[in-house]
Image (cartoon, rainbow, N blue to C red; front, side):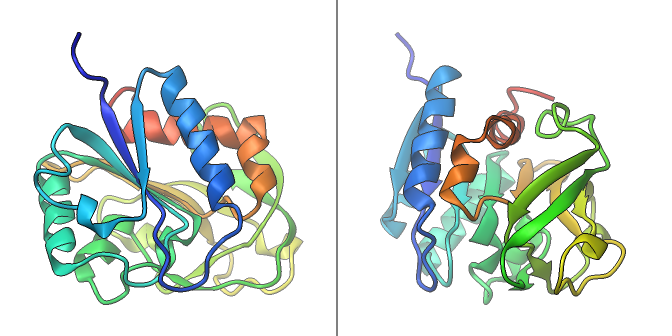
Length: 225
């Protein structure tokens, strides 16, 4: 029997650590198993080698923070992506590896800050993607509303899927165009996807958010278009 397609879930933190990480690991494990994927969760940067990533079709950074990879790990992840491997970043994955230019390009932008968590509404502007096709055009949600250092839409090949309406909460600093969810599919490389959502444990039990994560995962694994 051939081995199951493998996904590597990385949750190492070298800064703030989200309490929701265990809930995220459990949810992604369940979603992967339902799709016939083998998900391996680790905080060991030593997993990022050519041999360690062999047989892996996608890497997920779940609420990682700070500098979490070795120089060898950085090289291995870049080679993995260049060879077509997928990448999914969730929540504070955008607050990771600030000193590594490739990671900023892979993700599409970098975390800059956020106001206190509060309710608002996500505007789903592209429902033609498996991560957003199930969502309403206006999705009521409570989260940390991340601001980013640069406008994600300005990145090469970035496809913005959802934004947040800053008029509905206090403290937003990006203005009328405030992307939260986007993806990229650079020619000759793997797919990458980022969602800023996922601060709270409860998110990972919410059907709409779980479907959002599943659609993103299947897309970066090239199992769904």
